[in-house]
Every structure is written in C-alpha cells, then in structure tokens.
Length: 38
Length: 524
Image (cartoon, rainbow over all chains, first blue to last red; front, side, top):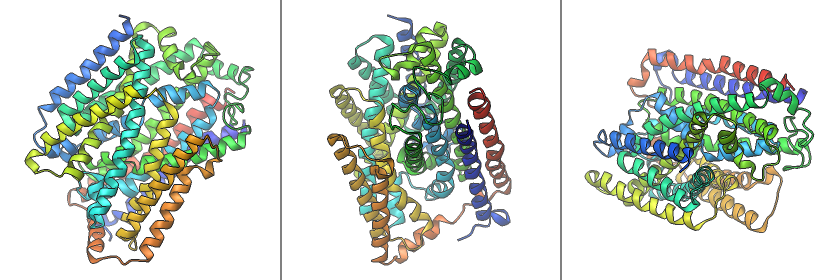
C-alpha cells in the first residue's frame, strides 16, 4: 500500500516538477516581457 | 461480413476522404512538408499524442497489464509522459526557431556540416522505417483478429489507407487527421474503460477484488506479477525507471515527436501543446492499463493477452460502442503510420534528393509512394510482432540523438566533430547491442540495456570529439541565432498565456495524484 501510494504521488509529482522547471526556464528566457537572453 | 469489419472500413474510408479534402489546401512545399508552419497548439497536441500512441499501447500495454504488470507500466508512463514538456522547453522551441523543414536540416545548419545532416537523415529514416513496420504489423494483427480477414489483406488495406492520406495531403493532412484520430481514440479509451469496469462489477469493487486475485498475485501491487519479468518487485521497479528514462528521451527528441514542433505557428504553440500531450498520454495509459486488469477478471486465461481489449470490445460492450472502441484503436495505429510515412518521405526528399522548390511536392509524393510499397512488401514478408520491436527502434534513435540535440542548443563548446561522433557512436553501439542481445537471447539488467550503453557511448564521443576540435565562427553564429526570439513570440499576452498553461501543470499534477489514489491505491 505504501509503495503504491508512492507511485501515485511520484507520477503526479514528476509531472508537477517538469511543469515548474519548464515554467522557471521559460520565465527566465522571457523576463522583461520578451527581451530574450543570449 | 461482420459488423466490426463494416465499422472499420467505413472509418478508414472517412479518413481517406478527409485527407482528400485537405489536399485542396496544399498549395506548396511548405504546406506539404511542414503544414505551412502555421499549426495551432491543438493540432500539435493531437499529432504529438497520435504519433506516439499506437496499437502497441492498446494491445501491448493492455496485454502486459492483463498479465499482471500494471504498477511497473504506470511507473514507466509516469516518467515518460513528462518527456513532452521537457522536450518542448529544452529542444522543441529552438527547433521551431531554426525554421528548418526537417530535423536533419536543423543539424546541418546548426553545425554547418552536410555530413551531420546526412547522418541524422540516415539514422532517422532507418529507425522510422523499422518503427513503421511494427506499427503496420500491429494494425494488421488488430484488423485480422477483429474482422476475420487474412493478415495479408488487412496489411494491404491499412497501407493503402495511410498512404492515400499522406499522399494527398502531406503534413497538413497528417496533422488534421492525427488530431481527429486522437479525439476518436481518446473517446474510445474513456468509453472502453468505463464499460469494462462496469462489467467487472464497478470500478472500486473491481479494483478491491483484484487486490486479492489468487490467479495472479500482485496484479495491482507495486511489485507487479513476479512471474512475468523479474522475480522481485525491486527489479521490476528498476526496470520501470530505466524504461521510463529511455522513453523520456524518445518523447524529447525522436524525429516523429520533435518534428511536430517544426509545424507549430509559434513557439508558444510548442510549449502549450506539450503540457496537454503529457497529461493526455498519462490519462489514456492509466485508463487502458486498468481496463487490461479488469479484463483479467472478466476473462482469465486468455491465450493471447494482447487481445484483451479486442475481446472486451467484441464481447462486453454493446456493438456500437465496441465498433467505436475498435475504430479508435485502429485510428491510433493509422495515425502513427501516417506520421512515419510523411516524415520518411520528407526526409528523403528534402535531405537526400534535394530537388528544386517547384518539384518538391511531386517528388515528395513519389517518394512516399515508393516508401509505402517497401513497407507493404516488408510487412507481408515478416510475421507479426507487436511489443518489443517497437522498443528496439525507438530507443536507438533517442540515445543517439539526445546528447547532440540538447548540446546543439545548450553547449557553447560542442563542435560538429563532437556531435557527429556522438550521433554515430550512440546509434552503432545501441543498434548493434540490441541486435546481438535479441539474436543471442541475452538478458541483462535494465541499467545495462543497449539504450544506456549507447547513451554513455554517445556522451563520451560528444565530449572527446568536442574537446579535440574548436567551435568555428559559423557554428557559434548558428547557435546564437537559436536564441533570437521572433517579434511575434515576444507578445506579452502570449507569454502570459504560456506561463499560465505551464502553471496549470501544478493543479493538473494534483488531479493525476488524486485520480491514481482514488481509482487505484485507496480501493486496494
């Protein structure tokens, strides 16, 4: 039961983590309303 | 002629008609090969998912879960599904910015190297051909099983259908038909899972009863069925994590996935589509895997577990719903096949033949026809094989392309020699090991899978090759071009919308956790 619980948390948690990382990277790239970095 | 055959034939004819109608909108090579580079997020989402999900899921994965491998498969899916999000952020949107027609063209431009483009072309074409063979074989097996027609006739019908769609309408038609098929098999998934659960005694009761299922102990436990692959739960989980990582790479950079971003109208469409695609794959896999477990309760001891969903569609559901579900499964196979055929045709035409702009569409159509005939001949000659062949193809291209693809964007030090050595060594090492292991029947732990050995070889070659050579001015300039955002993409409203959709991944992840808890873990 504990391991199944962990897998359920992991599946959703990994999804959230990928979304948050992507949001941070995207926000960093487009900070100051779209002035891109090099 | 049985009712399922009639239903499938009507579905196939409808897709061909849709393809023919879309062909009127194909005006030039840009439309034919990259859908006019104007596709909105929902079409990219549809094509991403439809290209990935094929008969392998509805027969292979459902069969695995029928046999007691539910939790390891869910672990694989939980990991692999984020490949879309990571792929679009770290590679896909830069691919879109390059304005290339194909991914090999992107590599050629980025590294200012024709050899790099040629290598990417050849590796991509070889793997997509192998993958499309198993995809078509899956469709043939499904149709033959359902309709009672001979396997050979089913292959002919399937190849004619997806060739006509691709031939008429090119990438534009493939995007639209993929999205329609995505909608059809999504509906089929939901309808199928609900009806099978109802027939098994209701969702929560069926889950509860399967937790004490004596015929296959651990069918819903984290360990999985210990008689299926590995003898311990820990080994099964290690396998799941390993395969999940391998398939993250596939979803991030495999040509039939990342090439969808080349057709997006802007990079916001790339990113938004990836979030929806990730969630869709997770939900569809979960529902179908559960359906596989429920079929085990309804009909234990099936000789061919991969036919579990087909059996349920024909015997558990009302005929109309059965036709919808089976047409959805068929759509998943046809949609993958159209993507492969369209891409192989595009790569051969644009990267190998390189004709004049005004002859591109005509030559592209001839190439697609030629490739389809080769696929048809090979499929009729080969016996059906669903599950493992698809893994052999996909992960080879992923491990050979991943380091070079990511380094092409994120490394200032990578050179064309490093990228070329990386792609070549990753491809040769993993492909040779896959074949040797398969022919000799060698079984290794997942961490020694050819994917990981190929990935290590690819990384080492990338580092050594890049250390031994210097980045040229042109390579440096090409990389800098990737970081120039178009004025259109700098629209602050669009940026805000994309941030919101990325942010939605947080509540969406919570919904996924709740769904898994309430529909799987808590009823146990």
